[in-house]
Length: 193
Image (cartoon, rainbow, N blue to C red):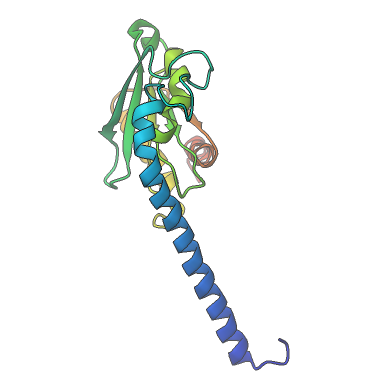
C-alpha cells in the first residue's frame, strides 16, 4: 500500500472508518433492540419477584427472593433533564435500620452502551435488605451520549440527593457503573479537577 498515491490512501482510510463506524452503530442498535425485547418481561417477572426459571427464585445472595424486605419503585425520581436520568428506589422495609445508615447511589453496568437500572435491581436488593436505601440510577448511554455525559449524570444524581438532605452518600456500581461512580468520587474529592 506504500506505492499508492496519498489521496488513495486517505480515501481508503476514510472508507475504512466509515464502514467501521456504521457496523459499530448497527451492532449497538442490535444490542439495544434485543435488550428492549428481552428485558421488560424479565425485570417484571424475575428480577424483582423471583419467579422465572431463567434466573431462579432467589436474589444474588442465593437465599432470599429479591423483593422480600424491600420496597421497590421503578422510575421513582427524575434527577436531571435528560430522559434517561431517572432513579429507581429500593427502600429497606425496616425504616429504623435504614435511618441509621447512609443511602447508596448505584450505577448499573453494561459497557456504557446497554442495560438499565431495572435490569440489575436484583443484584442490589441484598444491600437494601441490609438496611441501606438504594437509589439505582439510569444514565444516558453511548454512542448517543459521549464521555463525560454519563459522569456528569452521576454528579447530577449526587446533587439531587444532597438537595434532599441525604448527607453522606455511598457510591456503588458494577462494571461501567463502577467506573462512572469512581470518576465522580474523584471529581467530588478533588474540587480543582
